[in-house]
Image (cartoon, rainbow, N blue to C red; front, side, top):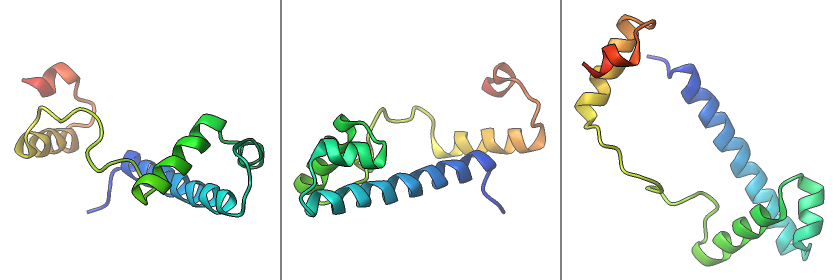
Length: 98
């Protein structure tokens, strides 16, 4: 079974984000300033600061594994919704919630 297209795009974005993050860390380790890194990579200065701080504090570039709000749906409910969407891709949200 192949991953849905939106999942593949998310993976690609995360991979590109990680590569950019490691480039930012490498430039910071070489002694570049936040403004220089920002101009070179096209990433905002505040984001550069956050990435460098997170790396030096926690040793990782990625966000915490469970950041954000917890899901209100169980795994069974999610699988049922995915199955319903696969069976009828044109279904409406109000139909899926029933």
